[in-house]
Length: 300
Image (cartoon, rainbow, N blue to C red; front, side, top):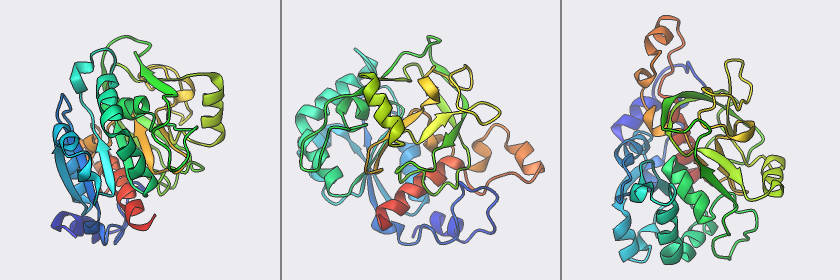
């Protein structure tokens, strides 16, 4: 366990259910996470820092190097993170070029990584990419098959333009998502930064299955805690407030907002008020989400 992780694991009583409970990250050094970088991605440093703060080993690796070695970098990894940014300049559509390049070069290897129990996290541009790769929601895929066909996409926000603001996300306690299942149902507060974040589906049947199987772990909520399609609480207009997806295993998860941007309590714009009223979390909510993933990589 790293020095940073030890300081969180030995901290006092929790002030927020997204904080890391004492001892939760014990053994995290056995988890190796690959954080992809290059070709316009730009959130790899924060993402790797957050994973290291949980005690995991996080290696930043250029996508070109992964392609060059045929995906052998995945061999001893337990988690692969597709981070935020603007891969290939968002040409054609956000994540499209990146997804096509990976599908034809590493599609079979990525499918096998998931079948072998690996975790995949897609954040913002990473979510756009893994949806277009067919890793989410992957309703037609079975173990041993290649990547599923694309069944969803992220399109331009209803209010056109790039929106950068904090949002609140409700957690579905019935979702199989391993990154959210230890949250005790508390709202997740994180920044959201995107221009193409409206989640749409290939047809109504796909959305119906996503809803029925609780494969939408997070939803934008308003001040009352209710799922919303209204701006600004929902920055893109996604139906029913959908902010992310997981697959049926719960080990592949993507969301538009940025957990890696909320690692420390004072990252939050209201941290002084939270401190003065005794509501300041022990760690940032985003770090708690990453810790959930590391916990799942260790314990299934």
